[in-house]
Length: 335
Image (cartoon, rainbow, N blue to C red; front, side):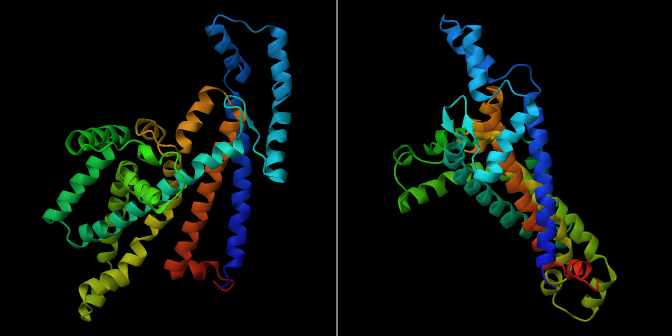
C-alpha cells in the first residue's frame, strides 16, 4: 500500500490541530488581567522610580499591546507562517528565534534520550513480567513500577542529586560540567553531555517506563490466553519465538501509540524537574515567560511543543502501520 495518502491526511489533520492549538493558547495567555507592560512597570517602581502613564502607553503602542486580541494574534501567527519570524521577547530583549535555538537542541536531545531509556527498559521488562507471571521477578518489577508511578519526578531528582553528590562527589545539575558550558562543541563536550543526561533521563523516564511496563504486561497477558497462541504451542513452536513473533506484535500497539501522548511531557522537560536540575530546556523558559506575561515568547514555545508533539504522533502512527498488518489493510483502498 502507498503510504503517501496516509501521510498527507495525517499532515492536514496535524496542521488543522496546530492552528486550533495556537489560537487557544494565545487566548489563554491573554486571560490574566494586565499585560507585559504592567510587569515592566514594577521593575523601576521597586527601585524607587516611576513610569508615567504616557511612557507606559508609548511602550504598549511600540509593542502593539493596545491592539485588539485578534489583530495581535494575526500579527504574530502570520509572521510565523510567511516569514518564520516568531517575534521579539519583551522581557529578554532578544528575538524569540534565538531564544528557542539556544534551548531546542537540548530539549530534543533530552527527550530522545529519555524515550530511548523508556523503551529500552519497558519492552523487555514488560515481556518478562507477562511470560513469567507471578514469579519473583514479576512481583519485584510490579513493586518498582508502582513506586515509580507514585514518587514525584522532582522528589526523585532531589534524592538523586543528593546521593550522587554526597556519596560520589558528582554534581549532576545542568547538562554540562563547568568547563564545557561555554566551550565550543567537541567530542569531549558531547561525552560530557551524555554523562549529564543520565540523571534527568532516569528522573523523567521513571513514570513513563513504569506505565509502559504495565500496559505491555496486561496486553500481552490477554494475547497469551488466546486460541492462536495455544494452537502455536501445540504445534511445538519454541516459546520465545512464539511470544516475540505473534503476541508481542499485537500487544505492543498501545505502547507505540502512547508515544505521541508521552512526548509533550518529555519535550516540556517536566518544568519543575528542569528547574530543580537546572536544565537549559524549554520548560523553565516557558514558565518564566508566563510569569512575565511575555505572550509572544510563551505562545511560540507552546506552538513549538505542539508541533513537535504532532510530529511524534505522526511517527507513532507510521510505526503502527509498519508493525501491525491489520492497520495497513484498513487503510488500503481495498481494505
